Image (cartoon, rainbow, N blue to C red; front, side, top):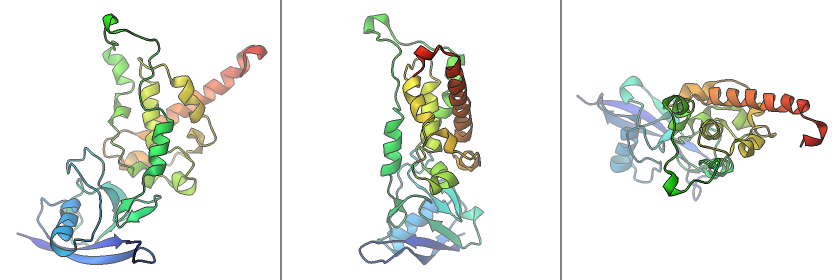
Length: 248
């Protein structure tokens, strides 16, 4: 039997609004309805001007991330029954400029993603005749967890340091960087470590760990950042053991 819940949705239409405001809707719901379905009901039945991103509705695409009662979450994976009796407050993700309503501008994240070179840079050229790159289960295990990122940006919305310093590469991109550095088939670690150790790299992280708490895929970006801190520190101190003429 359907019940009703109040949804307070952040609205911002730059062509008419001086700034973001909240708009309230009364939404009927059943126990199997997600927050995303509540928003779809608003758009289909109450207010067709509402804008938000969504695609798969199965916590795979990562596009429906938003602030739900102050916490970064996937709206397709958050159920209205767990938020009853409400009200439910829905906002655009923290730390990103708002393009319209619940849609944020992603260019900064895309730029950071490109900078970490999120692809395998082969250690050595290999012809088709030589066959595929082989990998043991143990080698796969070293990076498999960090390959599950769906670029939902929840970790960025949860990261206080990214909110204070947008130059920080951030947890999601650094977790993906670690995924490729830990891959036995990859030879680009030295290039990526320059970014890891840079001013905007891992040492910006203040180890709050909230990024891992909100991650819907249990990627644990905080762990990836900590591992890269250890590697960067080791590289720095090992540099002093090299002959003076070989230091860069």
